[in-house]
Length: 640
Image (cartoon, rainbow, N blue to C red):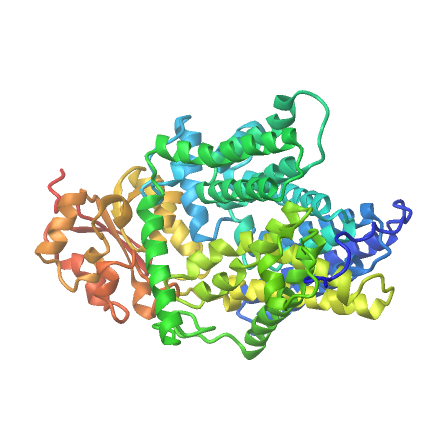
C-alpha cells in the first residue's frame, strides 16, 4: 500500500492565454486608484478626529485588494497579466505607507536610521557613532543606497528614502514571484503565494518603513532566486557572481536576515545531499553557496565586534522565558490581548478579523501541509502485508523538490510566531519570525487552493471566495501589526510613536538647531529624543549606549543627589521636559527606556517633577512653547 498518497507531485502549467489582453489589469488599476483616494480621505479624516476614519481606511484596503486577489485566483489568467496585477497590488499597498506619512518619518525605527543617514551625508564617512541605535552604523547598507540616491538627485533623505523603498518593494515581490514560480513550476501558484504572503503582519507597513529589514528582504529574495534559478551556461564563478553580490550587500544591511538566508541555503544543501540523485556539479555549487552564506554574515559580525548581541540577547531571553511560562501556566502575564498599554481595546470587528485571519491560515496549513510535501515529490516506500506501524518504521522518505519541501517545513515556525506575539516580551520575536515563516505559509496556501479548493474551476464565485479569504488574511495582518493606530490621530498621545511625532515637537527640535546649535547633550523622553536627534542634530543619551538611564532626571520628584550625579556623569547641556507626559500612560509601555526611570513611574509623572529645574540654582529656562520646556543645566554639570 502507499503510505502517503495525495496524487501527483507537480501541477499542470497554466493554460495559454493571450498576454496582450490587459483589460482586467486596467480595470484593477483604476479600482486601486479609487481605493487610494478613499484611503487618503480616511487619513485626513483621522487627522481631523473623525470616528469613521479607521473603518473607512480598512474598507479602502479591502476594496483595493479583493478584486486583484479574486482575479489572480481565477485559473485562466496569463502569466504576464498575473505579474502585472501582482505589481499593481504591490504598488497600491506601498502607497498606503505614503498616505500615512507624507511629510516626515513617523515610525520610531525610521528615526534611528535617519540619524545614521544624516551622519553619512554630513561627514562623508561610514560607521559613525549613533547613540540612539549603536548597532545601526555597523550595518549601513540601507543608508548607503539612500544617501547615494539623495546626493545624486538632490532630494532630501526622506523623499529619497520613499523612492528607494518603493523600488525595493517592487523588486522584492517580483523576485519572490520568480522564486515561487521556479519552485512550483506554476505561475498561478506563484502569484497566489505572493498574494498570501502579503498577509504577513510586517508586509504592508513595517517592511516598507525606513528600516534595514526593508532592503534586506529584497536582497534575500534576490539571493534565493539566484540559488533556485535554472542552471545557466558559462563559468561557475559567473553564475555565482550575482548571488555573491546580493549576499555581501545583505551582510552589510541586516544581520538577522543574513543569518536566516544562510540557514535556509544550508538546509537546502542538506536536503539535496540527503535525497540523492542531485548532479555532483550542482551539489558542489550549492555547498559553496551554503558555506559562503553561513560564514559571510558571521565574519562581518565579528569584524564589527558583534554589536547585535547587546540588545538582541535580552530580547530573545525574556521572550523565550515568558513564552515558556505561558505554555506551562496557560495564562498571560501582564498582557491583555487586543489592548494597548494605555488600556484602549480594539473594536470588536478588528478582533474578529484578526482571529478570522489566523483561523484561515491555520486551517489552510492543516489541509495543505502534506499536500505541499507531496507536490515536492515526497513519497514513502511501499510496503505490503505488514502493519501500518511497521510500514512507517521501514519506509524511507523520498522527494524530488528540496526547495519546495524546505518552504513547506518553514510553516512550522508560524505557530511559534503567533505564540510569541501573545506575550509582552516575546512580541518582537514573533514579529521577526513572521515574514520568514510566511515564505512557507504563502506557498502552502497557494498549493492548497490550486490543488484542492479550486483546481481548474472557472467559477467566478469560487475565485471571489478565495480572494475574500486572502483579503481577510491581509486585513488581519495589518490589524495585528497596527490595529487602532493604523492612522495618525488628531490628538497627541503619550509615547505612541506615530501619534506622538507632531509639528509642535518637531518645531521645538528645529529651534534647538537654529538657536542653540547642533551637537549639544540633551536629556529627555523617548519621543523627544528622536526629534532632537533627527531634526535638531543634538546628542542624546540612551541606557543601551551609556549604561545610565538619563530618564531619572525627569522621573525623580526632586533634583536630588542621584539626579545631579547623572547630569555630571553624562555631561548634559540641556534638559527637555515635555509636560504632555503628565496627561496619560505611555501607549508603547515606556516613557523613557523601560528601565529605572519607568519603574519609578507607575502612573503619569506629576508636573512638579518635570518643572523642578525652575527652582534649581544654576538651571535656566531657555525655551517654552507651552508644553516643551528646555532648561540649560550646564552649570549643574560643571560646564561654563
